[in-house]
Image (tube, rainbow, N blue to C red; front, side, top):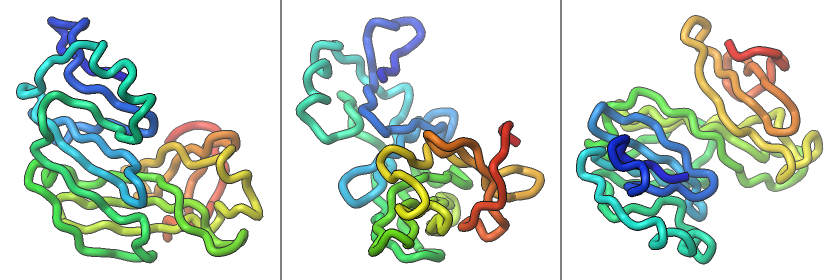
Length: 191
């Protein structure tokens, strides 16, 4: 996916490889999260400072690269959250360029030691507070699902109940229990 200025749609300013997801960090800053090795990378780019590049620059680059973000401009904020964090709350150092975001829910694979251990976790990143909460999805195990063919694609928090809901590719939409780790029910519509 490429992002371009509205006035120059043929001159991309940012390109995202597979699994990279954008989010608005502030009116001036576009955030991107993406898996990067055994971490989740969070980067922020000043929208007005993004330099245009030729599409030919990036056309073959992603095929040969494991990088998820291509830009001719360096990020103004860039850090990683290790996927090896244990369940619970952890302190993190958040660059000021991303510190205006209250909460970001990032689904990611999680190292399971056996087929009954959680194979996915939600990393709830509280950027303003400098915290990340790791919520292993106790219901999503290799014994219950086809890991690799099925996975959690997205999740968000319901503003009224504060419970997390999301979507599992190949399975459906779900609502979690209040602890954020257990499946409460499968749902037909987004809350």
